Each structure stands twice: as C-alpha cells, then as structure tokens.
Length: 148
Image (cartoon, rainbow, N blue to C red; front, side, top):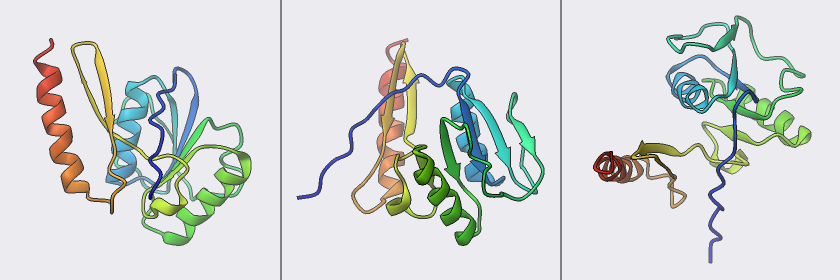
C-alpha cells in the first residue's frame, strides 16, 4: 500500500522562496508563491517575468543560493541543475519541489483553488496524471466560485 502525503498549509508571508529556473513552470510557481505572500527570488539567466514583486537574479544557479530559504523550487530545463538544487535543499532541510522528478521532491506543488474564503490544494500522486488533476481543479474552482 502506498502512503499518502499529508496536505500541509503554511504561512508564507515574507518568507524567502527561491525558484531556480525562468520558464513557464517557474513563472506559474512564482505567481502562486507571491499570491500567498512569499518573498520570491528567481535565479535564472533568462526569466519570462510578468510577476509583480519577484526579485530576479540574472545568472545561473550556484551552490549556496538556497541558504536562508524557507522553500525552494527547481524548475529549469536542465536535469543536472534541478538535481543539484534538490540535493542542496534536502541537505539544508529546506522543502523542495523538483519539477521534473517527483521522487526528488520533499513537497508537491498543488493546483491551488480559491473562492468564498476557502483555499484548496490538489495534487495527483498516482502516476502524475496532470490532466486528471487539472480536471479536478476546474471542478473544485467552479464549486468554490459558487460560495462567493
């Protein structure tokens, strides 16, 4: 039997969140983290941008970049970099989401649904069926919108 993960909600207000990578996944993660008050820093040579309040360090990841972070996200297109970010985070005891390897994650980034003063997070752990999770998130969002 596979053990489920505990859905934990945390206060991100003002907490340093480091995202390594500057593409579409990194931008989506930055949008969610800033929406919940995280102090987001993106480390990447290129950044799609468009997320107010995000600090961008225009450079490649280097060991030590996660020092002082509350949580980390590895979302580059480079497997080796993502692996190194995950390793550094785990060594420092920092929760990390590694976009391309669920087995290297210490937390999973949920589909966030909000409405009517309620926040729900959905994650699929059964084989990574992202389409199924997206369908469930749409249904939950519709329900929550009805609470407004």
